[in-house]
Length: 128
Image (tube, rainbow, N blue to C red; front, top):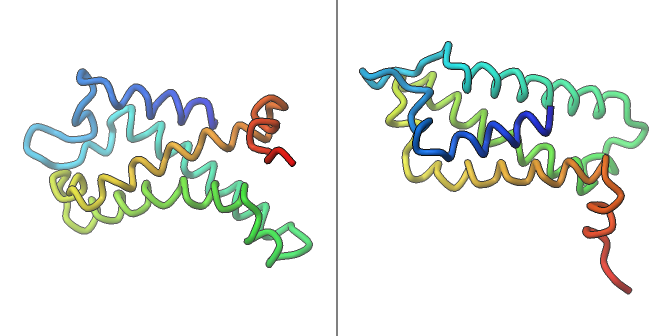
């Protein structure tokens, strides 16, 4: 799911797919393949985070863990944009400049891959 979300993030930057989540009248396209796949990925990431929180033995330690912070930070831009689109009913307000920086935060998903790669784990360790 992490790889799918990263590939989707990269594809969305191509000019061909600019505004692919919006209809010509400015309304959100809730059936856009990009929106559907992104929603599925975020539902999975949210479910995973909630299950990990519920099943962890130490809630404070879990909340302070770097990987947990990365996971939570990667979810924030999607939900802020989604709630903004739902409230306004238009794409134009969801793409407001003040929210543009939140989309960049989605890049922290790359750090989620450190769980699966020894090379990436080594690159995040400090040298003593």
